[in-house]
Amino acid sequence: MKINGVVDITDNSAAIIAAVEAAAETALDAAGMQAATMAARELQKSPSRIDTGLLKNSITWAVGGKPAAISSYSAERPSKYTGKMPDPGSYSGTAPADSGKTKSVYIGTNVEYAIYVHDGASSGFLSKLLGRKNRMAPNRFLKNAIMNNKGELLDIMKRTLQNG
Image: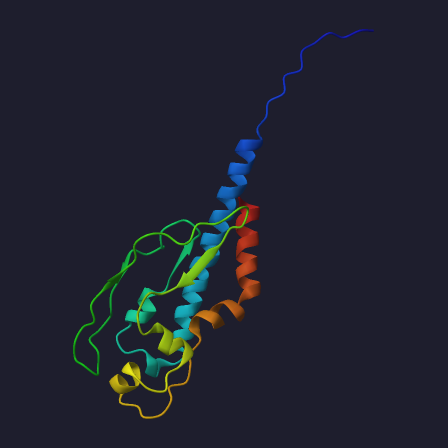
């Protein structure tokens, strides 16, 4: 028996690749949101470090090549040291573009004094501002948010990818 017919092959690979890339960006975005929330919680573990809330409110995330999740931030209250409300801040531009098949999410802040809070300080601007003569111990709020919660962040990404 001979069967004659036509086989029509449609290449949907471009649509599949686009869907997988979109799902990966969604998963990274979800993990970034959770990591930023965790970083703010890590910062709050040292409540004496939180004066105005500007640093806490500035923590954000961005998927590679995309803008930051928040565009602006502000303090919650005036500084107890200066009595003044800090100037609000903003983000512009995008996170570094991903190269090749690598997808990334960036978590961070652009507040000038964040590095002194994160890595500690022994002298200079922040120590003078806070009236401290001894070293300010580091509060690695960004690093700890990621390192102490890797499993949870991976689970968020897995669930997001599975639920598509």
